[in-house]
Image 1: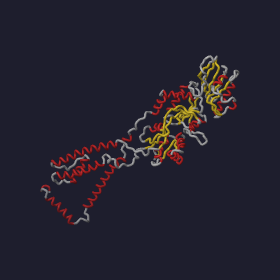
Image 2: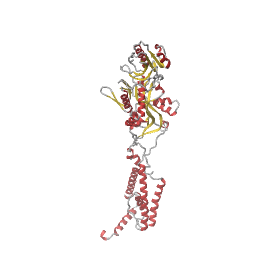
Image 3: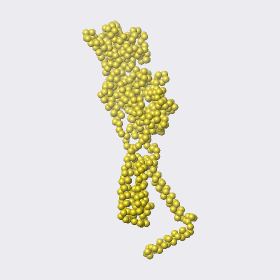
Image 4: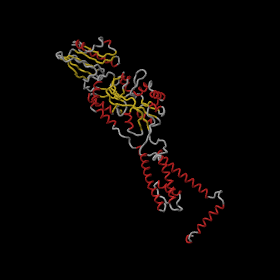
Length: 561
């Protein structure tokens, strides 16, 4: 039976156990009929140790036990192997997961059966099968986390334990309930996702998996070649891309001197000015002669009509009143049209984007662009700097200004509110932080669009079981519901910016008021100076003024003297 299995499977990677180092697609361990399992157990322990120390990589580890009474003890390391053991007149295929030195009960499940009397073809389970143990027997699974909402947030209890929640956290809790394991949360030592050093050692959660200090990384990770050499990845749990976030703010707009001018086209303003002057002259021509009928008076009267105000100068004749009435009706329509146009303009916030691409932000717009350190985006920018001009400029700026490499979203959002800064980050996590605040805007095209996945320790024994659950959670809509719960539905920007009309928009109105007061005061001072007895006025002029006043008094009736 052992010879048949050996010959019908992929040839064993080696036949001498002492030389079992490096990478092997398949390793088959075959026991003799007299083995009691102790020697095989010791061999499995050594294999587990070499895999843990990165001295050995095995895709398919298969153990053949010809005796049904042979029992293997747990190897004390995290392993995934298939046991082919004689049972009655056939062979039983059993998939086994072990969980390290603290676990005494492995997770195992019968996934196949072969009997010489049956024509079915023998199938040796290999890495990639979905037929895996569904009960982890309450064993501990270590999951590394960091603060990144809406995916993960956590706090420490007084006992020092971590309590986590969030979209991916709830997904892990459902996974633990489904597969019957206990979660041990592990905190990222530096709060980073993980980038490689010059010696190939990773920081952040990727480094935790690389050092085998955790089994799974919960924060969604982008896949790149450097990471794929050190860790494995789950099916996607989200889709994200990067854009440039800027802060527009309130009360920082440039002064707009044309707020009350743009309500009409310049041709309309010229027409209103022409009609104002012509109507005043025309009314003087057609109206009856009177001391009050002057162009000066009717210019003020018609200006009052434009401002929807009354006047004390009205023509007494019918033809004059007809002209005046037509002007009133015309100014009513002009006033209504201007008010409607001005209201519609003030009710809408018009903004001009300072830039549309990363290159414009770094060059013509003069922005400093920040980026979260320890992310794959930094690695992507560094790699693309060799062949892409905008990325080269961006990477050089990050080298010249280390303060642009921020620790997280909170620091990045705070930085861009301090001046001409932009934040280069994925939209999902930042949208959760800013909560549809219209003071912030995303600019530029999407960069690095890709799926985000959870991370696995390299060759994790039960990675397939985790991946199967994630696929089912995605296909059944569970993942989408959890994401909607934590992220919420996207809503339009709130109306706060539309309710406040700042000084920058109304400065022209205040300027007109100030100019009117200044001119009025100037005229008052000039008149006082003129009437107070200027040395340029002659004595005869003063005597003539007094005689004119006396003559006016003599013309009054006796009763009024």
